[in-house]
Image (cartoon, rainbow, N blue to C red):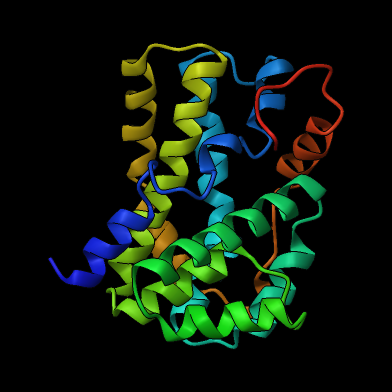
Length: 221
């Protein structure tokens, strides 16, 4: 394993202090509306989620890792996150991620992005920062994106197991089934045209917006 791969493994670990555990990305609304209520409906949710990732978070990370201008990616990523909670959550993750990684090492891309955020040129988007980190560490882009995609799915499963609730084994079965689509999602993300970034599932955005008005909730998005 390369040092870059291991650095990314640490960065995507649930224990890494970026606050991922506080974000359900609208899944909490799906559970409250009884749309995700068992293993079958969770699998359906995950399959729909992975379908949207190549033109969303996975696509932004891919383009940043490939060297696309981070100012442009930041602007599109910010504009594409219609729900305020998703924009704010991505910003908070980004700031915490950059702060932590710049303490652990010297990363040119992340430092430049941090300066652009501080100066107001960029807002700050977690997928863009993660893609820059992959580029800075020299991580193989396919392996890096596969790992990122896995953590996005794993995080959703972890939230669902607690919210529905489900058995841990049921959650792992859903994850195992959905993982089969990771290689295709990664290659789609790499091949996605910049003009297509931001295409999203309206249902996910609507549930995230509804989350802001839930009577009671466990997560901040």
